[in-house]
Amino acid sequence: MTTAKSIEKINIAEQTSRLTEPFTMVDLVEMDDLVLSIFLCHGNMPFHRHMDQDELFLVHSGEIILETDWGKVTLHPGEIAVAPKGLGHRSSSLLRSLVFLLQPRLMANRRNGDRRLFALKDSGRLEKVSAPAMARQLSRTFEPLHLIDVDTFAFYLMAIQGAGPWWSAEEQSTLIWCHEGRVTLETEFGMLSLDSNQLALVPRGVPHRLSSAGQAVIFGVRRHQPPGPPLAS
Image (cartoon, rainbow, N blue to C red):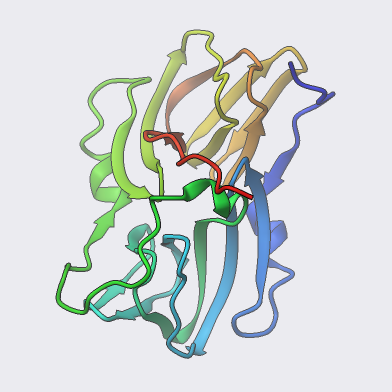
């Protein structure tokens, strides 16, 4: 059961207007133990590592270089890479670039047994995924297309056309992030239209459905692995 009385539409362009200094960040939405943020990348960040969380980078505009212990990749708009927990990394850009971050921030103690203290330099390979290229592979509507994993979640694309089924997620909130076109989100609170680069969060347990007069594409996140048991106090 939810205590929400409405669902808020978040306009990414309005939020990014607040970013004026390099490497400043705005949190867009909290989804249970995940946070979606956007930051201004301009210049060089120092190398660092996150011991308890993966970090997903998705370029909104501009171009960044993501350097890690596993090598480096150049990310253009719509391209995604994940720096796994414990991997040394930094982002840099000669341009004023806007970058989405998706990472766990809450309930770190629930990931007992899923924590890697450090990543060995030669134990993996950094990969990137192109959301625009993957969107061209969408052949069925209302069926998620997996893009990449971040922590215990899968980040996906889904095509929307016509009216989809009603459904609800009891175990997690549902992110509706319009990537292309326009989608209509229908819940018990009413109808909400989302254009490209607008998003909304449906609380867990709230029935909802999506529809689109044309073809639209959304980003979404779903848990594919339960978190570990809480650490003993």
